[in-house]
Amino acid sequence: MTKAQRLLLFLVIALGVTGSVYAQTTARVHGVIRDQDGNPVAGVKITIPDPDVKGRVAEATSDEFGKYQIVIADATKPLAWRIEKEGFHTTETPKKVPAALTVELDLVIFSLDGPLPMGEVPAAEEAEAARQRQEAKIRAAELFNEGATLYNAKDIDGALAKFQAAVGEDPELAPAHSVIARIHHGRQQWAEAAAAAERAAGLKPGDAAAQFVRFDAWSRLGDQEKSLAALEGLKHADPANAAKVIYQRGEELFNGNDTAAALALFQEAVGIDPENARAHYRLGLCYVNLGKSAEAKVALERFVALAPDDPEAAVAKEMIGYLK
Image (tube, rainbow, N blue to C red; front, top):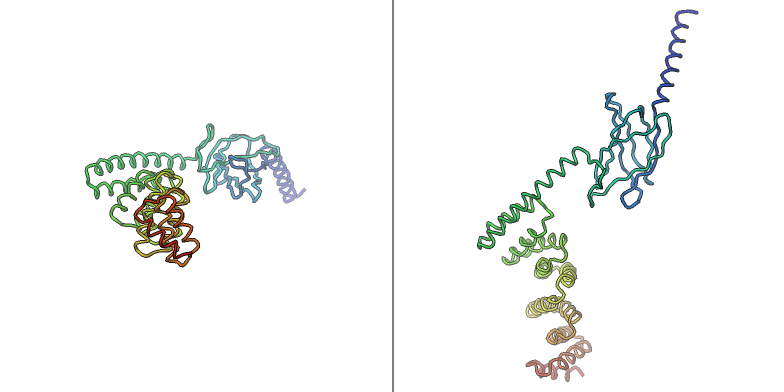
């Protein structure tokens, strides 16, 4: 046997041994990645580094059905499985699968909308981010309290600065957004008031003050679509006061000759409170101005029936006569 032949035989034997050892340590893992509600999640990245072999990393990404496949070169030891996708908690959890086998292992990834359950280990950077978020919330609460003290002392400028700093630390601090909205509303800064009220109402839909500012500010900005959307929020947050608020804003619009916008609000007012006589009267006047005689007559007749002794009842009766 020549030297070349002996070398070739050595390589064949070595490769055979290496392949055998590799087969004994390797694990092939497949499964489905689902969210906490059991829905398959696509685009989840799995990363499994081998701490003993520099640069050896097993990687896989779930497909459109949430399925994944991954090959682990050395499954004889526990390895940290890193599971990540935008919008979900990133976790790094030690897992051990049997070597020399094909293993089915389904995984769960948890949405950021909820906390991680017990037993799940957040990745180091997520744990650090969570710590920073908690510290920011504490600073935000302190700033809010300082702002409240200044607000009660009538230092509105100082209070506003504190509240704005608070939402800078914690954008989800709904009470701060609500007070910011009210401050801007009181200063007739309608755009700023609407923006802050939108954030406050989005975070806490039951905040009646924020819903009022949201409705009133959009109404004064002339954005009928957004004011009507805000009106729905106001009706849910403060139904008892909604009809009164809507009627008052409708009167302002009517007196400003914005009949179409006023009409929409008076329609809402009588829809919430059918016994609101003045709303029926104003509604009738809107219909008269728009040349809708039949609708005007119905509204004015309802007004007279509800409030026959109202100072405007005689005028309403006269108009009804013209509308026949």
